[in-house]
Every structure is written in C-alpha cells, then in structure tokens.
Image 1 (cartoon, rainbow, N blue to C red):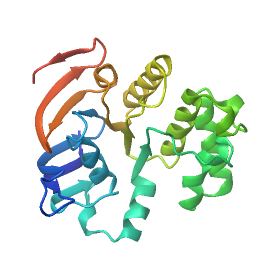
Image 2 (tube, rainbow, N blue to C red):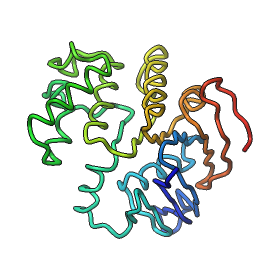
Image 3 (cartoon, rainbow, N blue to C red):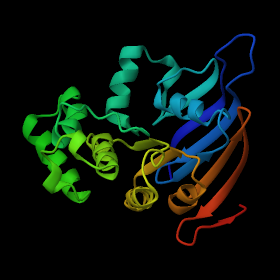
Image 4 (cartoon, one colour):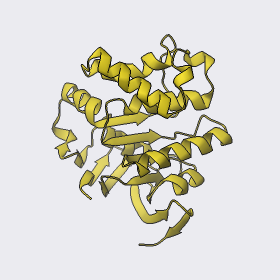
Length: 236
C-alpha cells in the first residue's frame, strides 16, 4: 500500500514557556488504513488531527499528505488542498442551519468548482448510499443527531478525498447512533477509504480501525493492530 500520511518528528507548541501539545511524533498511514488515535483529554490527539488536516501548522518537524508537505503551503493553497484531498467530520456536525441536507453536502463541491449537474448527482448518490434520500430536502433542525452526522459524512466525501478525518464522530450522539456511525466508518474503510479518527470511545476505535495509536503527554506511546472483525487487538 502507498503511503498517504507521514509525520516526521512533528510537534506543536502553543506557548513558548509551556510544554508542547505534540512533541516529536513519527507516524505513517498507508492508503486504505483506518487508524484511530486515542488518549486522555489534553494528550495531543486533537492537535495531531489538526496538523494532518492543515488546520494548524507544526512548530517543528514535517507533515505530509498525499506527497505534499503541508508546512510549505500558504493558507490559500492549504484551503485548496483540503478541498480536494481531505474530508473532515466534526463532533458537532457543523452543518449550516439555513441549508437543506442536500445543500450542505453540495457546498464543498461548489467551492471546488464542480459543475452543478455533477455536484447534484454526487450529492444524491451519497445521500442515497447513507440512507438519507428521503431527507435530502430536510433542514438540520428537523433531523436526528444520527442523520446530521451522516449528512456531515456525505459532505466530507463529496469531493472524493483520499483521506477522511473524523474528530470524535460519536461524541454528540447516543449509543445506538454511535454504533451506526461505527458501522458506517467500517464500511467506508472496507470500500477503500483511508480513515484517521480521534476518539475517546474504545469500542469505536476497536470496531472500525485497523490500527490503534495511543498518544499521551504529546508523544506517541504505543501502536497496536486491531482486528476490526472480532474487536480483538494483537501486538504487531
């Protein structure tokens, strides 16, 4: 499998006098993997995700996605790169309340300059695949938490990004919906989608990840291979 993400001695310090939020992390993710980053609050796992997303810049080291060193891109170039290479699913959905489900999904494609017909076809294809065809014209306020999260996943996938990032994707939904989100991420990965997720939910991590990464005090402390089919973990 080809290498899609590479962090080399990557670190982030927000305060010059304080400890680094992330310190000297080396991590590679191959295309087709599903990697879960776990750790206690304040461990640096969200910082790691933000560096890979290009939402934050490392203060030292390198971050590469799809062969592009994100450190070297301008803010404008980073936005363009994210639009076509990275889809992001947030804990609290971040849907626009005044747009329908379909229009929320369409937005990244429109920003990327995709033709209206192609964008509509792709949006409807995703909504149908995620069981939301009948809810395409519904507004977020009229949707359940699980429906809103599936709309967010469709929005993240509309530009066919090679990398899908998920930040606590089950953090704002109930247990039943969380199980559905886990199954969705597992199915996406089985279809070839590369996934990097940050979660406190051990069941989610074991259920849909092929590899678990533990981060503590800004450092990567352990990696284990996860058997998603049986939820067992085995040391590599």
